[in-house]
Image (cartoon, rainbow, N blue to C red; front, side, top):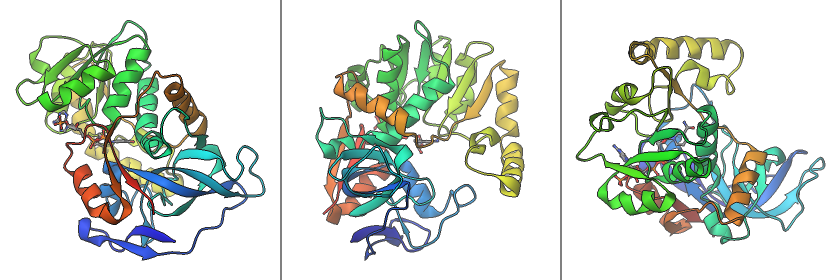
Amino acid sequence: MLAIAYVRYGGPDVTEVMEAPVPSPAADQVLIRVRAAGLNPVDAYQRAGALRAIAPQRLPLVGGNELSGVVEAVGERVESYRPGDAVIARTGKVKLGAFAQYAVVREDIVARAPHRVDLTVAAGLPLAGLTALQALDALELRAGERILITGGAGGVGLFAIRLATLRGAHVTTTASSAGEEFVRAAGAAAVIDYHTTSPSAVGETFDKVFDLVGGEELPRLFGVTRKGGLVLSIAGPVTADAIAGDLHGLRRVLVSAVLNVRTRGIRAAARRAGVSYRYLFMHPDGPQLQSLADLVDDGRLDIVIDSTYDFADFRAAFERLESRRAKGKVLLTMP
Ligand SMILES: NC(=O)c1ccc[n+]([C@@H]2O[C@H](COP(=O)([O-])OP(=O)(O)OC[C@H]3O[C@@H](n4cnc5c(N)ncnc54)[C@H](OP(=O)(O)O)[C@@H]3O)[C@@H](O)[C@H]2O)c1
């Protein structure tokens, strides 16, 4: 089969098309003929080797963290899927493998693809959708609360805005003028143009803050968060609690110690403002993904696609993703 792999750690030039054997499913896995894969900023971090301490990988590594496709074969213990089923998944965090004609994924992290959208489009749901869902759960967002979601026009942001409005929250987000129509369509009630205005300048306090941008603006968000509230980030410094589910034993102790030192400053800044700061790493979860697919089928959640590229144009797809200007998801279709 054809696959896109990272042959070394580095920039775009370490990505190559290679021939690889079709993987065989283990007892608890399904073999999926991949229709499309979604691209995510994490692909570029994995290609650069930036996540090696958390998810140790062997090179060459077939990349790709989310996919849609059709089940080709199942392992002997698989009960919920049969060949021919249309499915979606956020693949495993260490093995990845979505940028290929075939991928194996554990049954418990697979979900049935929504019927309301094309199977290619469905590839845009798993990673960003699960991230948004798990973040709003971690924030314990409730009806009537006011939430600030920074970076609302991207893959995660558009899902987060819609899911937050479905929970009955009032959503304020940051976007450029080009992103405004997208975040409004997703349900944002108020939009701050981040090119001209900082959320810290609008004089409003939010019950919950979900940060998708990080950088210099992040510490300023503490001042707009209700006292005792939480600023949850997926783009700022990684706090030790975020890796608890991914690492074990000595590696966990060592990585936690490093992360505790690295985040001492930002956690102290949050405490001084009377709030707390945490980073969230999303994780694959079949039942949660199924609940998102069901929302798509009910017409309550849209999968917004920025652009779709053929397999042969994978470098252009990465370029679009890494421009960080995508409005919604960037997809790659498999040959
Ligand atoms: N921890 C985790 O588990 C996890 C999971 C998923 C994603 N992430 C991280 O979350 C972030 C967002 O991911 P994504 O998939 O949504 O990325 P994305 O789709 O590439 O985001 C692109 C969007 O970001 C907006 N943007 C860029 N700079 C901005 C700024 N300074 N302020 C406000 N908006 C800005 C852009 O809007 P304009 O074009 O209008 O400027 C564009 O719409 C990334 O850093 C990613 O690595 C983490």
